[in-house]
Structures are given as C-alpha cells and as structure tokens.
Length: 181
Image (cartoon, rainbow, N blue to C red; front, side):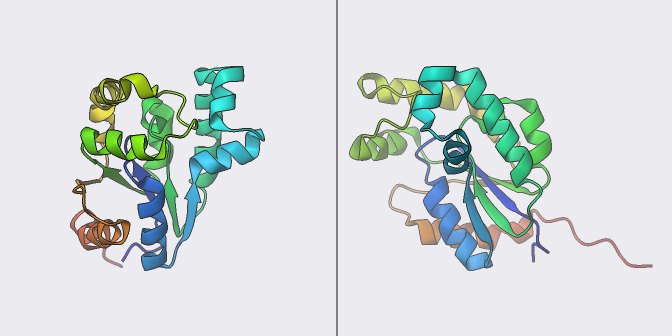
C-alpha cells in the first residue's frame, strides 16, 4: 500500500511517537528509527546534555542533519522529536515520506510525563508542565497540522490500536498511482 514510502510521526513530546512507531513498523514490516535516540548516538551524549552544553540551536541543527540522513531510507517508520517541525528545511525532508501527526490531548501528555518523570526533556520543568506543554502545543499546532494524516488518540488507546488506526487511515491520504503508458 505504501510502496516503500517511509512514515514520519510528528507531535509533542509524550504523544507516544516511539511506542506507536514501533507497533506501526511491526504491522508494516518496516524498520523503526527514533530520531532522538539517533541524535544521542551521534552526539555521544543525552539530549538534556546537548541542550545544557551546546544549547537548543546546536541541538536543532543536529536534529536536521539526522533527519536529512533518515529521509534517504525507505520502508521505515521514524519517530521524530517534538520540535522537528520548527525548521522549514525539515519539512522538505519529512515530505519525502508520509507524515502522521499524533495529536494527543495536552492534559493526557502532562499526566504521562508526570508518571515517568525523567530528565531527558530539557524543554519541560515539572513545576510548570501543563502550562509549558500548552504553550508548546499552541506554538507548533499549525506546523503539525501540515501533516498528511491527523490522528487523535484517546487517553485509553493502546499503542497497537493507534498503529492499526494509522494503518486504516493511510489509504485515505495516498495519491493514486499514475497510469502507465
């Protein structure tokens, strides 16, 4: 159905891009990549450390470089970082595949992130989690809305069920093949 086209998952941190991406990759029999994990591998340090030592602009540049490399692959599901949509050049990379926006409600995201409480999210302070996520969502919503497919998982939806929903919705946004001849 996808003819080898890769799928890029976009959305705020905590929407489930990595877990849904793994489930979707299994259903499609595709490879799975998490761009944040690749960035950490390339940099040899955590995202939080990259932000602390080099700053957000350096992180965003590294993020774009990793995305540029990833878009060369086919038959892949790629979970991207929440801010990847901020750089216009990244959209040229994303558009080489099918872009799916996981639009999980902000209060659900805040609750999820409170439950895991890790230090890997440099743009998020536990003291102002919900207001900060709301601000990030409002700043990025128009960018996310450029995705080919908009999926709104409910708070109880399991990653496998969300992946199956994506799979069911993909035909609604694929362009029909050009006739031969």
